[in-house]
Length: 137
Image (cartoon, rainbow, N blue to C red):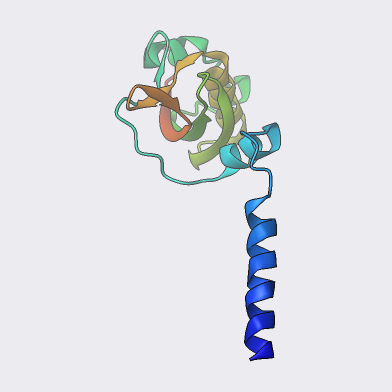
């Protein structure tokens, strides 16, 4: 009987301390961890670059090394667009060359985005952005 009583006391002490813990609102550290989490977020409206995909193509600076090598093609950059419309992280899904990859990332980061929305609230989402490298004729 004493062991049951002590077990109940320990459970009450545990619950007291667990429930008295301060659960403050989002902190910067928590937000950073949330941004780095690679999870799927459902959205009603996808993020879109202001000026459309053509704005990215206009901001693209074709690398001289790719021009000299007559390199053409398409890269796909995976981007984390945050609730403010900023590109927070990138990774390459389809690569062409290091110079072309970096040029595509720089062009995408130079454009401001309208964030994705879920139930009319901005959400952080990962999205794949195609960028085409085509030599002028």
